[in-house]
Image (cartoon, rainbow, N blue to C red):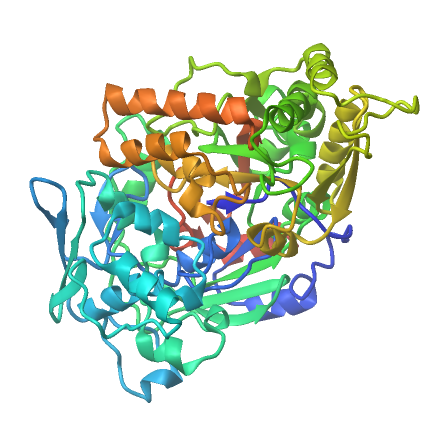
Length: 604
């Protein structure tokens, strides 16, 4: 799942969070157990088919429901039914998945339903799945689903593209069909032993066709069956969720590991309690690290992912700071299942291409960049070098694997550039392209303190090899839109795994994903062949070896320079209980109990 590597926007005073904190926010939350959440970047919208950014997905995870979910406390992950009645019936060849839904699940009320309760039925999942393949939705997730090989859906998409006609939702498709009102079936072209993880994805949440057809902007009108519904939205500023009055009785249960002391305590406290535990969510977008940190210290948000520049204040030497501990603040520190990266647009005339001199330029840029300086200066030690895109905690991650991605070797970078004709011909200290024209790299960026530190590291690193770089600053959603359109030359961002499998990370390099997740627009048949084999094979030594092969190709061609796996620190105030941002799981907020009276006493 694409996320931000950092934050943006002008510095804000912690006492006046935009559109939310201060007297107005306090008045709005008075007497209710509202969970106050900070976001590091702006959302893009709330249509599960149309978004892939981390922040929109976190909201969608609490509004929409896929058939299955991950246990809220179990690690390794365990899959549980959500709207399904039980785990699916799966054929012995892993090609046929049959899902039976619970009866009586209702969508949140909406005018599109004309005053009548609207039950979730099998056709809703059939329709929701088809939407990914509708060219009109421009779904960034369609390639991942095409990789699964659902019979007939790609063909239906190709027909709409070829005939230039609207996608035909009413044409029966063998690969996804409702057997009756509460049962649907998915048929795959080839075995997919991990397909059950797809059925856990937030993007697989059911939408109602009436709602989608009733509104021109589906991103602004989310209507699902989950525990919350959208109450208010000020784009890039404030998101308010409230309890969904139509949400069915769902009761807390979990299977924490025997040695998970905190999880076992929460199980004893919450087991059998009806969800959600709070009355609603108020989300404020705080792009800049300092106001986000101060808003937590001042009690205006209930938890925070510590901005890298405040790591030493939060957890010096990996332990919670004594002044925070005295306030009852609790902390969690872990290596996240993610990787950060800088990608090069492979269609760009300067940095793109597959010829030796273009490959040499990208590899030289990668070798010149000082990862250790980024870790120690910008991230304050809260990261480890990434050797490949494979995220820790996922199948395919090998802690023993080593690659050039972590290497810092300016001497070798200079030698590569010299060898392939990138020389300083006019004696001004800056290299030119082999044809003698100026060599200037252009990187998209955002306007935060942290981002500026990363940009300064890039500038300093490349100056050491005589390469100029300039930065174009915009908000993250604008950069992401431009990236998908192929109009950026370079950009840095992060990706957090939503399933315990590394193949999702390598989808960013898969040729058919160009225009979606493959922002670098990298297309190499040898890599695509390895990716296709990964998809087909069951987990085991043969599949694990493919991840190393894929990583070597990415390192050799360098469409992506992987940077780090982030060490995340989450802190929460003592007036909330049950908060844990676990790996691979986005539905978190309904499990958090808020003691608003304790919060008010603490903040007097």
